[in-house]
Length: 139
Image (cartoon, rainbow, N blue to C red; front, top):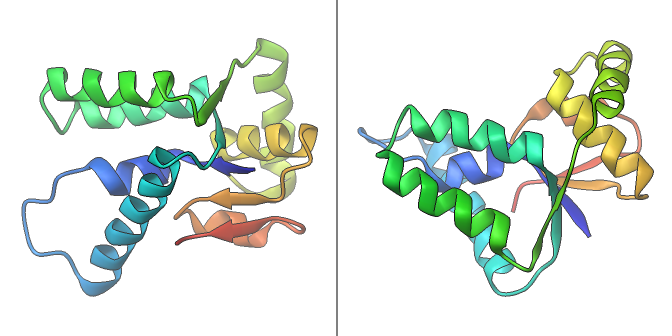
């Protein structure tokens, strides 16, 4: 099982208003490929915080009705396991963020992965490349 970061959902779902540079277009295609595998049954793990991050960004960029549909699809899909997050989990992530020089939400993902012995993450966030023992998967 892999953790799936908010960036994967965002690259897949955000609509573009202009022609994307080659590297961004490639990331979008790769994110959509990852989500096709999840739709086909590949089991992934994320957290309610990461789903909220997706919702917050999508709500500013696409119609609310479309955003609600996307978030509903994410949280009800049987192949997407969504972990609840406690205050203690989020607080612990602040320390992890300091240690690895990543954002608090990225640190939360790392802590959840560590708890569950997961060492691969679907993410387009390069900060994960600096974390020993974690493999970032982008396709």
